[in-house]
Length: 286
Ligand SMILES: NC(=O)c1ccc[n+]([C@@H]2O[C@H](COP(=O)([O-])OP(=O)(O)OC[C@H]3O[C@@H](n4cnc5c(N)ncnc54)[C@H](OP(=O)(O)O)[C@@H]3O)[C@@H](O)[C@H]2O)c1
Image 1 (spheres, rainbow, N blue to C red):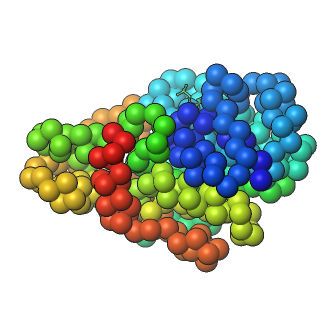
Image 2 (cartoon, rainbow, N blue to C red):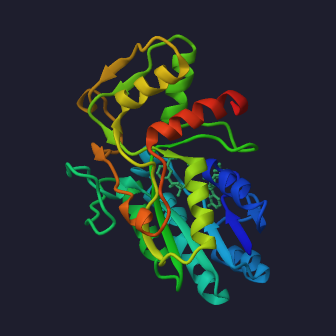
Image 3 (tube, rainbow, N blue to C red):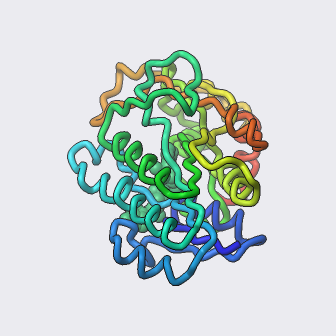
């Protein structure tokens, strides 16, 4: 299969390239190769390649910045995805696109399912929801919602997410700041990349899937597990969401159900298993 990966130098993009490259012809396109917000550039660079699949890992993830710069967020997260969906339609390619737990408002108390109604509470979140809709307009599209990404594929960029920050703080003997009342289903990029390859190689029905590690935890529980795995003293600066002010609001409860992906034959490993693999792996690549 020929697979074009847009945003190939990002955290997830690098993992998808690494996962798919041994078995497929992968064309990695970094931002310098293709700006997905430029419709003409999308047509000029993707159409002649005639890929079987376009995997879009490009995104503008500046959640707080987006509140005051909505057009920048929309150009990449919504209209860039529309351009890729249009290319997929023209050339008959499968489109894989990634979205986020932030499409929900966080008011639920049970894990969100794919058919739960989104209600974004910020500009970034709204731009990502629009991107989902544009992606699903492609004749054959998989939209995979991920959240709180962690992990780094060989050759990937330096990690910058919250999990990496907690890991670094714990290793340095400091007490990382963690939320006691924000619930997430974290996503190991390596597992998300594996799921992506399996979806492309299998015959699962196209559509929207939650692609996170199975289960859910608070940030404090995640940090405790990391401390255990590292064998360091579990010292934390535990805070509540109400104690911290962000420019953009975040959902307080972001557990996502992975039942639909499991029913399609792809079981996501539990988050503790993923963290264990991450800690082992991180000592090699960080
Ligand atoms: N990270 C998370 O915790 C998280 C949570 C929920 C959902 N997601 C979603 O998961 C997907 C992958 O995220 P990630 O964490 O891997 O992001 P990332 O590391 O920030 O990578 C995104 C990549 O997209 C590139 N990019 C930005 N604007 C572009 C444009 N106009 N054209 C082409 N490339 C562009 C970036 O290049 P530059 O670095 O040069 O800007 C970067 O290489 C995204 O859809 C994201 O919204 C991520």
